[in-house]
Amino acid sequence: MAQQVVYALENNIPVWCLCNEDKKQNIPAFLSTRHDDKLDFSYYKSEKLTSLIEEKLTSFTKREIKFNFYLDQDMYDFLEKLSIANKSTKSKVIREIILTEMNKKQSQNTKP
Image 1 (cartoon, rainbow, N blue to C red):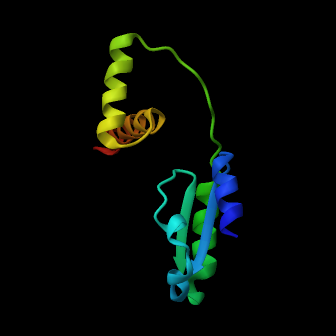
Image 2: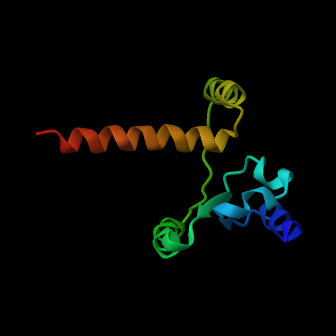
């Protein structure tokens, strides 16, 4: 099973690993310690399995869109430094910046 998970991740396919809380120790270390935006682990107790699946499936139905854009050298250098400092990809840094701005906008809209 672990080989299939790694294959999917290497081919940019999102993977959701659903595991009973009592079986956490059975997950191979190379998977449980892997840091990958496309890999999601959920641990469940039998009585809460249905609600967990419903909650997670709604988040997986969000469509991802890929696009390209151009940066000048100063912007690229800044982004490169951020990605190194955060130990993440440049794409992830940009997504985090956008999410921060979206959250700011939402909080401004909810103020009386």
